[in-house]
Amino acid sequence: MSISIPNSYVNPNVRTVGVSKLRLMNASQLRDIDKTLVIQEKDQPLAVLLKYEDFMAMQQQLLAVLQTQAVLSDKGAIESIAAGRADIRSGNTRTLEEVRKPTKKD
Image (cartoon, helix red, strand yellow):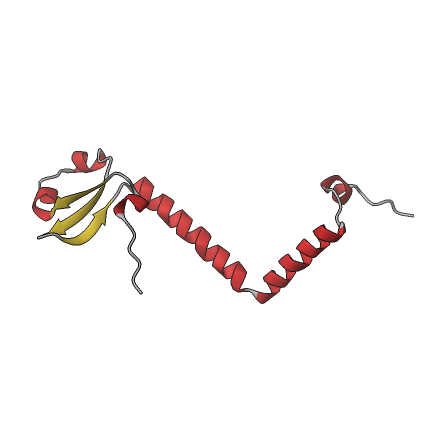
């Protein structure tokens, strides 16, 4: 089964550009780019060019997904989450103020 993701899913400002047109662009033009470019040759997609900030945002999202996957793969973490949810349902909780309140020594 293959999954098809439309270009607009990633960025509604996707535009295709040929390799020869890309070669004509200088650093200033690349810096001012406001669209994601799909670089292609003879209607065959070769690569994607996007702003560095967009790339870093994608990397942060990927890292968040990987961290979530790691937590969800840890049986001990899942058991702790389930226990915490059970405590909440049963009312076995304390406020932050109660937790931070210093204990009295006898």
